[in-house]
Image: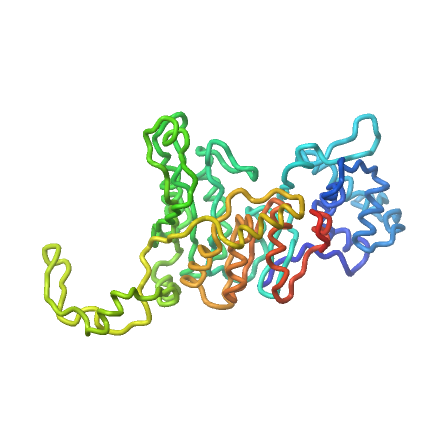
Length: 437
């Protein structure tokens, strides 16, 4: 898998090193307090220059070196110039603010200090990696730029267009179609012929002020077909009997709806004919039931029958051939909790970071990875969240790439990958939370 590694800042002269500096990640790490700090750090530019020089192993004197810039040839410090630009950008993003009454002193905004650090457009930092894959801190809209390997499977749970968005945000119901088309366009551009896109979407989105369910997900599927040429191969049910009672307003309060127990899983592809050679249900066969094993042992059915006006015929010996297992139904049954979810919550607590608020069980991506890809093929998740897709791909021997725009989620999910071959964490994540990289 070839992808731009923006975590490095080595090699070449001063200009090339400054060009490679991922300033958003470095500044975020510098301004963020340690897990035990009682207040947000307030740093003047001199302290910022020294901190970045120390983090990158650069001689502090390089920051005072002036070089010609632009057509006029005026001499500036390239380091200081880029840092000041980064500060202004982070200011407009609402991440840092000037300290009142102090010239050139900055700190995280209160919201950024307590909440989540969202990657700006164009920011791409390899947060952590293994021999098989990498987790990128960045925006899903542009993080695939430069990818030179075809995507065989993109599996993700998209942000739900619910009235009260989770901490990581999300589109409104009115914005959902455009958001989804724009998000998936780069994926489709890199999708291998017959590759798959698996989307976990919500069924519990309602028309504003009404108990009528929104048809936004249906409109998304139609838009993907008409605008991106993506075909619907299957619409599966994720049956989750452990879902908390919902929708609260209409089921528990107004008592008109039943409690929800499932979410849709769409299987999509850019080429239905090529998809047939990639999808293989023999890779996900389930054990036969005791009843089926007994039927096989008897040599199959011992009767003849016709059902459904001739649509189904039962012949002597039917279902008697020994097989490796039974083909799964297109209903995936699992609770949302699992051992990896519990581990992530424990790591988040140890790091003093917020836990992701919507995690599917690792068994969900594991099933589709086995079903729709082969070892060493590339699996991607553009809304990485807790990196469960990457984790399942790592365990299954697939190459993987996850993209997550909240730095804290990248940092927490890195803890699940520490034991895998080639694990490496970007130094920019070292100060995010309380465990050293």
